[in-house]
Amino acid sequence: MTTTLITGANKGLGFETARRLVAAGHTVYVGSRDAERGRRAAGELGARPLLIDITDDASVAAAAKTVEAEGGLDVLINNAGIEGRGEGNGVIGAADTTADTLRELFETNVFGLVRVTHAFLPLLRRSAAPVMVNVSSGLASLTGMSDAASPGHFYPGIAYPASKTSVNMITVQYAKAFPDIRINAVEPGFTATDLNGNTGVQTVQQGAEIIVRMARLGQDGPTGGYFDAQGPLPW
Image 1 (spheres, one colour):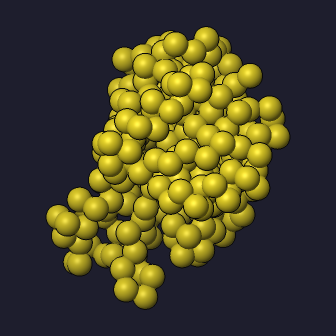
Image 2: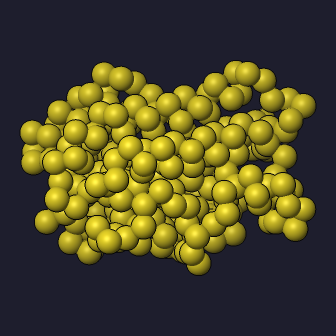
């Protein structure tokens, strides 16, 4: 039995990923910073609720102790994240971006990912087939964002793309440090979720496809890569 933790899994892409992995036979922990929402989601899915606020050291440490006591972990999906939209649900543009804008997003999207990874690495390293999936974005691609023909080129924000580009670098460095773990970054696509005010153009079923695929990698699968549903992406 494969045991999987998904952060930010009480709704959106995390919830759909959990649903698909439960159906595939995984024991899934639905990570949520809201205990009641987590319990409801886990009950609906046939999963296990796990209280975890990825911005809080004590919360993450307690969650890791719970998972360890209940048998360990094989797959970690770092899904929780924020986009940080401004008034009227608009993207905060370059002129209005401050250091505090970046600090808020990096605390969740970057530092939170590292905090969770650091806490759960000892459990992953005990697994016979450990996997880590970091949910990134197409907006993390320096190649894509600097290409006027790329769909993401129009995006006016600084903080969110910068945070996800950091996620990609972190993914590469972790993959080199731990070659026994399959560690990859994925781009779900512009999916309609609360993160973007439901402005996305595809469903969570479509967006979860690459997350689920990479979560089910065998030990012969790639590591240190950046993928969407069609294949590898340019950094």
